[in-house]
Image (tube, rainbow, N blue to C red):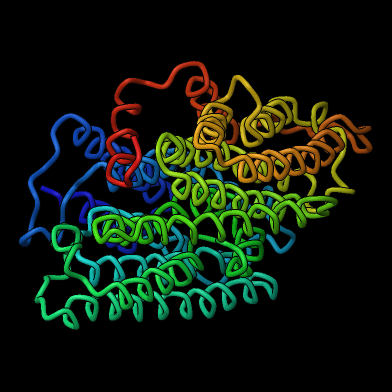
Length: 489
């Protein structure tokens, strides 16, 4: 049953609040993540029937987003088990003010918020009613805000309020877009249930003016949550101040969920014959996002903020891929997977770096390859993966988008896309190489890197490499099916 993918993490969250043993709560977190992933894997082979008259359903787009979120959550849960133990013992800290969370609130709040965050993202992935989709995406904001405020210091408080305020404005605009969508049917004298499939089936009778207004509102509203520029201003602060394990989920899973909200209405735009209008807007916001990200990545002094701006860049790439259409839509779906894997890898490794150096300032981090050999190697692997360097998966998906643009004769789009990718690569290379290969100006740590710290990012590094060597047939088929729903191939 579809609801199990929402009820399992939600029930585990409730149980986590009741359990008094910290080790038992951490085991519950991992077990819930395993159970959730098992449910999602089963759906790859046998999709469940829809529920509540089509309000909940599993299609290729939703399953792809859900699979990314579930897989990353499993890796994050394993990492979090070690992270919470380390924080609770006060042995090391993810930020300067270590241990404040545990002196004021129980660890249960963090674990419960993580699980409820997964439940909200799962609900968004299977929602085919535009109203329910809005509720689910709003729920992701409310459940993730306590995670950003984990350390309870001034910077995290500021980041949390910024996230809530800007996200709330964005989600309000998205709600307005939902009203516009309903108006596109009622103004044409048609009663259409607010289901994706019903709007797609009646696309030809919808009022174009209201529908265009709805898409703009969706693009601005859900685009705020997705991190598209210029609505991205909450993202660098939230990703920088949240614990690294939370940043991995925000960047790798949440942004895709918000993009799904835009893609649902994009399907309606295609059915209404307004695909060209929607694609041009996606291209515009995509290039603005890549340009803004490139400008802020150059000479960035905070490596977690650099990773956050990298997410803005990659959300722009997704928008450009769908905006180009054709084979680029398949490239965008594949790139959603590649970006999420590589970015989660980098944020988890950033947590290890932060634990040793106690700073996010690039200028104060040097000699990483010698002080933390495994994390240092994973840091460089993550850099190669996120910048689309062969043979990692992002190269294949970015090249697929570029090839589609060239084959479509969009030379200006191709040139701008390549130029911005090059600027980002150079800007990130300077930072990563300085951190990894610079002189080691502090003694080698006596504590070895634990399996909890290096196991999850190492597994993600292997996945990033394998996706570049060969796309699994199942993933290729699912990505193609999702691309066809977006007018691609």
